[in-house]
Length: 113
Image 1 (cartoon, rainbow, N blue to C red):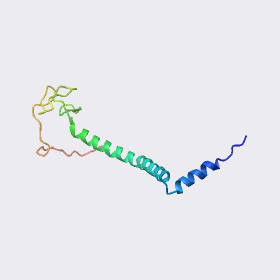
Image 2 (image 1 turned 180 degrees about the horizontal axis):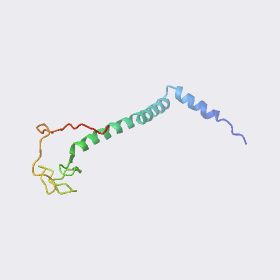
Image 3 (image 1 turned 135 degrees about the horizontal axis):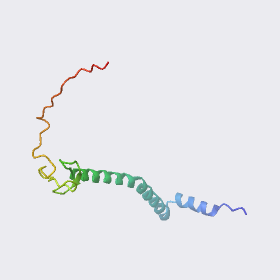
Image 4 (image 1 turned 90 degrees about the vertical axis):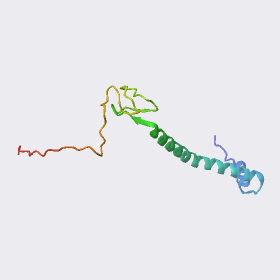
């Protein structure tokens, strides 16, 4: 059985959109608000997620002894080292500042060929 095209509803919808009456404006405002929400909501969620990730990264501290990353703790949950000053049971007693460290490199000739 073939369905008829609902011309009455199509014409009524077109008149509602074209009519400058209250219902036409209400329908257009509703459609505009829904469209704006669908387009802007992912952008707002992305910005909020990015800001949250940056705040979380600022609070994370790597352990100087084992490298385990934790947040807001005074001791490392993996090895027990103190995260405040870097001393702990498995960490060295002193840390060398990388800007003052010197690395000695020896040049060795490769005589295999």
